Amino acid sequence: MTQEPTRTRHDRAPVHSPRATRPPAPDDRTTVVVITRDRRPELLHTLARTGALPERPPVIVTDNASTDGTPEAVAAAHPEVRLLRAGANLGAVGRNLAVREVTTPYVAFCDDDTWWEPGSLRHAADLLDARPALAGVTARILVEPSGEEDPVVADLRDSPLTGPDWLPGPAIGSFLAAATVLRVDAFRAAGGFHPGLWLGGEEELLATDLQRAGWWLAYVPELTIHHAASTVRDSTARRVTGLRNTLWFTWLRRPLPAALRRTAHLARTVPHDLPSLRAFALAAAGLPWVLRRRDPVPPDLERRLALLEAAQRTSRARRYVG
Image 1 (cartoon, helix red, strand yellow):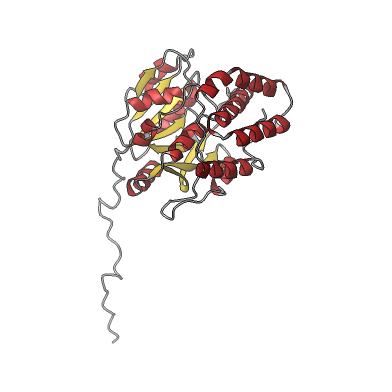
Image 2 (image 1 turned 180 degrees about the vertical axis):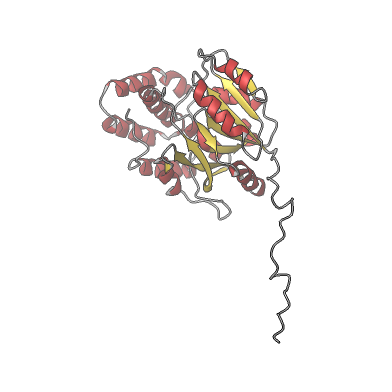
């Protein structure tokens, strides 16, 4: 008679204890900050998704003077959300108001039409905990409902910049506020989003000032955020402010030769239409305050900005159209 072999502890069927199937505990290291204006359905969808995250993050919403009942809808449907009523359309500065109220070490920005993948906020906080010189991590962006990667993801993944070996992903020179977790202390020390830029490419100036102060930024593909573009987005208005802000950033931080070169390149390559003309006119009108606050970056950082500029010229995502 053949004797049955003795089972070792490695051969035994696993025992599923209640603890093994218990959902992950909440994570209190990150606050989600959202700015909104007149996008009530999109915002309520984002807040529902955020409220279902396993991290259970605190949420702060800055309402930029909505006229569609957004604040009342948020207060009724999501009483757990901290709601700030700006009283005027502050654009990106609405995020600054919210960050003043944040008590966690990290802030996860998202727009009213984006939402974080479960587990991404916890992983981002782990990465920032382990790397004290890392100011922020930007997530992979999936466009809904197709689930395809946003074209800007290729720019992040193929960044021409180099960085220290400890970075959790490619070093990047800017970030997308709708898809980034930032260190609150770094954000506050850099002054947050500049009020002069309002909205549209406002991240470029803040990212440059963070790097100037010695911070690093990284793209981390293991982090994911979803984007279902709002149907009420005014793409032409965003193009105008985006191009204007690119010009203002260029003259605020780039040395004179680089500023002249980039301005001339944009003048040649952007669509020769009314929105572009309006953007250049607005940029020219703001030159007095821009020149008063002009503070060019040092040569080492300018070399990084020049590399980014060269990469942007062939980018599918960086096109002033719409």
